[in-house]
Amino acid sequence: MQRSRAWVADHFPDLKDVPLLETRACHYEATSSRNFIVDKHPEMPTVWIAGGGNAEAFKQGPVLGEYIAKRVLGDEGDPEIAKAFRIPTTEFDPNAGRRGDD
Image (cartoon, rainbow, N blue to C red; front, side):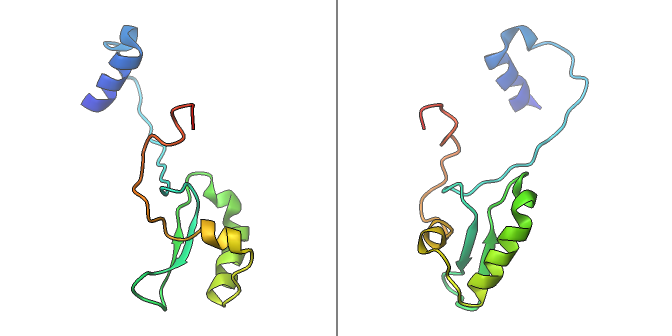
């Protein structure tokens, strides 16, 4: 609660002492590349990792499921998409894409 109050005070000073009437959470997760992950585990060749969606990922569920099934069965499909969906090797930057200049 303290972090939320500090953020509000920093961005909306006039609201810093306003009573809180309700809270909700929107659980969001993203990969460092901001893409889905569909790739073999780097140390276990028979294990696949598929994820990296967010609150809207359910919309892509049927297409993503078909893509994952094809990949697991050996059909890489478009190599550029396969490359984009590899396990990211860069560190996650929580501010990427949120600064307005990315």
